[in-house]
Amino acid sequence: MSPPEGLAALRVDRTQRRAAWPAWLWLVIIAVPAAIFAAPHLLRHFRAVEVVVAPAVRITASGQTVSAEQGSPELTAAGYVVADRQSVLAAKYNGRLSKMNVAEAQHVKKDEIVAEIDHRELDAQIASAQADQAEAAAEAGRLRTAVAQADASVAAAKAPLQTLDAELEQLRILLADAKRRLERDRKLAEGNAIGFSEVDDRLTEVRVGEAKIVWTQQRRREAEQQVAVAEAQTAMARAAVAVAEAHERAAASRVKVLESQLEECFIRAPFDGVVTEKAAEVGEIVAPISIGGSMARGSIATLADWSSLQAEVDVAETQLERVKPGQRAAITVDAFPGKVFPGKVRRMLPRANRSKATVQVRVDFIKRDDTVLPEMGVRVKFLPDDAPPGAETGAVQDRILAPKAAVRGAAGAAFVWVVADGVAAKRSVVAGSADGDNVEIKSGLGVGEKVVIRGAETFSEDKQKVRVAP
Image 1 (tube, rainbow, N blue to C red):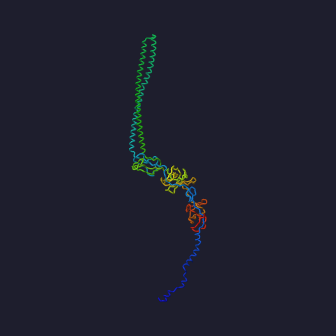
Image 2 (image 1 turned 135 degrees about the vertical axis):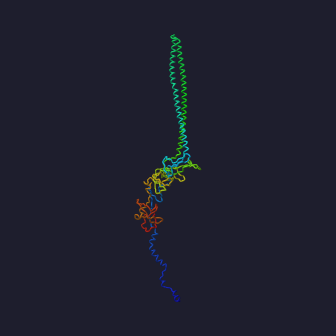
Image 3 (image 1 turned 180 degrees about the vertical axis):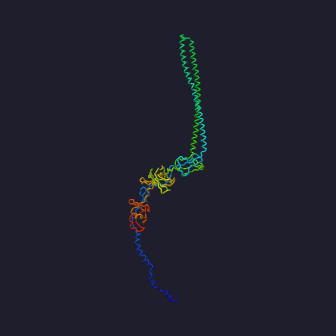
């Protein structure tokens, strides 16, 4: 490269240097117009607008207004579904289960045989007792025949007594007549009207008459002895009949006892219900009480009366004054949260739980379906007396209300300004019917959230810094 060319390379171009602007100048030129354009927006953003707000409130199904600070004024308690009428079926005597006629969830009728205990040995004992009863009855019948025969003997023995009594009466009359004639003849003989031989004849007649009476009396005593013997035999026969009849009654009583024991072998349903548990199987030994270490089953099945299902809930002692029998209630089963069952308070159990400071309250299901099962979790809402009709069935739902002044926009595109942490945010809501100075909010707004009712006219952006007026 030639020297001139080297010097030319070191020469400074003065024209280009005059055309280049400083970088800070370019920043100023750009920032000033931008600041002028954004100033109103920035001022609006940092300037807090004073607004008046009001909270959204909830109207309960019972018609009471509730704010977020107040909580629910309605008393609610949790518990479980229980059967007011439930029976654990068990055997009265030890035995082997020979038949099981039911299964879980099966409906049974009252007196239906649920299970059967082996009773073959008992059947043999009943047959033997019945044979003893028949034998005692036959012996009693034979002895009754003997009594009849003895009664006939007594009657036959008593028949001569009547004849002898008649003979004695006749002999006494003849004797009295003979004695009268004897006295007459004696007087005549003393007067020499008749001879003494005739007096002797009359004396002989008297002595013969007395002898006949003595002999007849002897015969009567013998007849009385025969009657006494016959009556004694009759008494013995009657005593034998009484003994035989006592044996017959004893045998009959034993038969009844054994038949009663046989009936206990048939486990019957005490009422209409549903089998909720089957605790034993055919072939197992069952007993009235299951003793630890033994293989015997203490129960056979559990039966619940489905029509007596109730909600059993724990109510705090301090809230008992808000519960009374007959009070309406709304029952919600945890397994079916979308269903509300109407209920009525049946009773408060007369005991308290000292550890939880609660009292159990039983609430009847007025209407329910077969999907509700014992031991399901439930929640019961106790309604006040002035609750509107339908509150216990869920037909009347809780509603959220907001002031009319807070709801803006056209139908189908309504919105409110919700204030939180000093910032008002625009939120879309679904508005319902008007209720006085309020509007029902079906969705988009929660209880206790504060909405702007005055001062939102100057808002021009989604989020606006605000200052709540006192």
